[in-house]
Image 1 (spheres, rainbow, N blue to C red):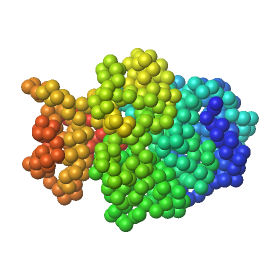
Image 2: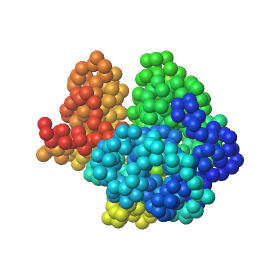
Image 3: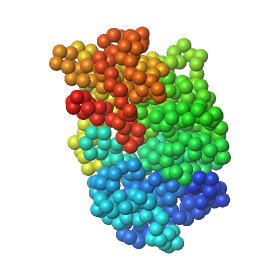
Image 4: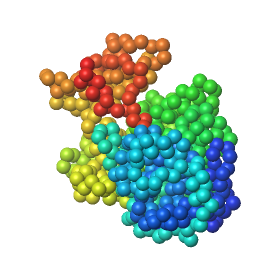
Length: 505
């Protein structure tokens, strides 16, 4: 099934229902959304695009992102969404690696691609050429696709080396979307999804389920994340659902508390994409109420590995509520999750190992990279590279990426545990813990700390704070105050960059 057929169905059932918004302005109902997508499909086909060919979308969040995406799918093509924060040369590399023939861009990014001599044709969605496409002959109907056909070619964040293209099929997108109903939240035509995080990533992967139910799609005029804009739009639309990275949730809480914002109109915030620390989510729930759901996924198994329900995130009555809140929840309906040793053998409850996933949401492989595929998919299981454990109730607690594990004196130390402890100190705003080579012990624990406003680094105070909460051998042997932590375009801390800084010290 072509996942885009859900738009066709919604346009048949609810043609007059408002669909696409730029800020408060409705720019298309479902009938118009469908018709514009058909016009894009008709033009792509006229350019010689064949089913299975790739169409890149290098755009900030805007309604035309969805029009192009569904137009490409209607034409039988696969989309290659590219984070708008990437450099033009990085985007051009993805376009070349994916074999993309046509790229759609928004202002500023068009010039970046041209300056980088990106391959193929480039169409700016504010150009006369694009306006002409939307006046042209539409395709007759969406082209049928098989469930195993490529729908979305997702390039990993590339924290080390070149990013890899993850093959995401129509079956995967369908399964993720249906899992949303079962494990995350319900959707109706009265709801609105707000795209404040990149539509090229997690936020965009939730558009299909909202299209299927005829919900409203709201793109902020800023094209990205702005706290005041989010609060204003949520008040205006009501019943707002959105995806946010943990750093975004923390920032929204800080701004809301400083400006007496209640979060009126926000119904559900799904968070994922990095470590959500206990102190941060507890503070967010205390301020906004029970509006949060956590999911855990990877590009290789998008959005669908585990979920921590709205109830579990907000519950403070269970004896182990803190442990559950530190977890990433339980396996979603369409997946099997287990914890394995280095050979993939299942480990007992409570024992740490690699998180392994088997499901229809798991990728068939990486784009033109059989070596990486063979390392990652073993015996039908996705080896996530994440280290964690599962308790007797099925809750999975992710401790760290396996590559971030610190081994000191033969003992495993998980940076996240140390970070959790430090973040409860009032002088610490952000922290990242990494290992530093040590000839005697193998590695030392060191912490890079962003101090809270007005606070100064007091190593003795932080040391004492750690000793109150974690074992002595886990506490940092050194602290480094930094103005900010290096992060990639998805907000993940670049620990590889911090390790490089240590080498240069």
